[in-house]
Image 1 (cartoon, rainbow, N blue to C red):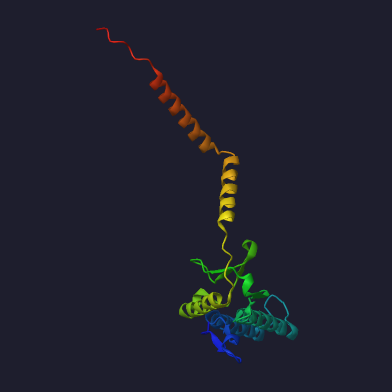
Image 2: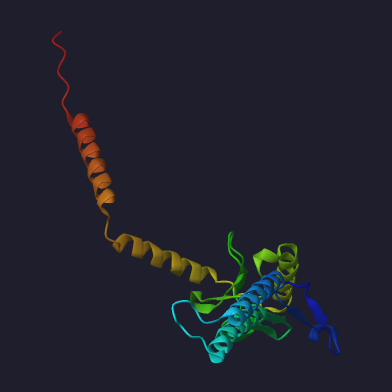
Length: 214
């Protein structure tokens, strides 16, 4: 992935940062070259076999054409991811799909450990991947991720802070939900043991003491 490019229009806030993947494009170009060479060799060397199978010129062209199509598809898919970061928001183009997101729609940016690209946290627990920033690019991906988070901190509106009344209502709703939730098998067993223990303890406390014979 190339280091984010800055395209500045008049005014500092109108700059646009462009992010593209890099290493996957190199790998895709190498894979496409291998596929293309193999298809060319097979197509050129395709001749009549000893079993009596006859191959025509159209068959050779077809084999080469299939290789060209596969090679082109790999290159297009690898080169398609792109991310534009601006004051307006994000323009995201992945291998499949395209989406424009204004900053108020983006709630958070996460890059979980082991993930191949970051995820945007949207409303209603929706997520959207940013394939233009790929973990395989390592330091370059880190630079792009820092640019994305810096833009989010700068231009995204602050998230609303719940009032104490809202927090209290949420806590009360959670308490009621927990109280109404059916107990699981292990919880029922623990509750029964606790009741037996309390009953045995109460019985021991209530047992009358014998009078001293002296």
